[in-house]
Image 1 (tube, rainbow, N blue to C red):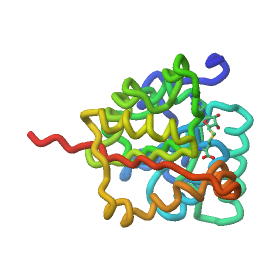
Image 2 (spheres, rainbow, N blue to C red):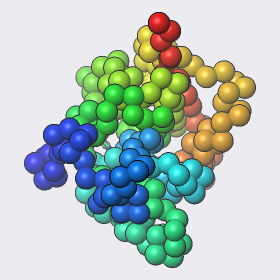
Image 3 (cartoon, rainbow, N blue to C red):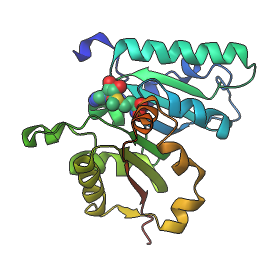
Image 4 (tube, helix red, strand yellow):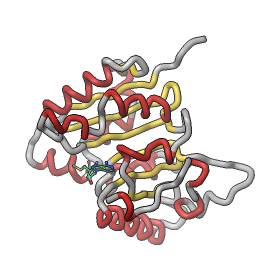
Length: 218
Ligand code: SAM
């Protein structure tokens, strides 16, 4: 149950110095986490992003205790063997379906990732899916205007579900083919994570949906 891990009462209560000791405390550059990998699993995507965006703080959110501990160890080991690198990446054990607003302020994130989430096939379990109309309201709140939400799955039905939730949400718009081509992160979706590598080894098909948080004109 959730009682086994601490939950910050608000984003102001997250102690970043524990996650990013090289960046905090830092009175002159109060950096904030900008990328969140939801259900990060063993952390492959974060490890790739850490060196691609060395000045951006990023965090994985993972429900399973042992998996979270593994990712923590993996990051610490990389920090030791690559001095100065991987200081911008961390992981937290939490239930992302409940606690996103406890971690991130309005318009804080520029990228959110949902890579190979659990499918929850049965109709009555669709409410447990990490992309849903209700949760997209929360994501639209924490992603900044112009920020991007990346999803990929090998389950066609789930891919269609995620895409239609995003298409039907008033705060998100699809990226064009040219924009997808130009974004280096899109190429990582199918190959950077452990689940993605498994699917690709087995020759499985994947289904992506990449959408932008719209910019409201006033
Ligand atoms: N994204 C990783 C990858 O592509 O290799 C992991 C994919 S795995 C199929 C789904 C992950 O989501 C599991 O590690 C699971 O523990 C995690 N998860 C499921 N529900 C979650 C929740 N409510 N909050 C955080 N993580 C969750």
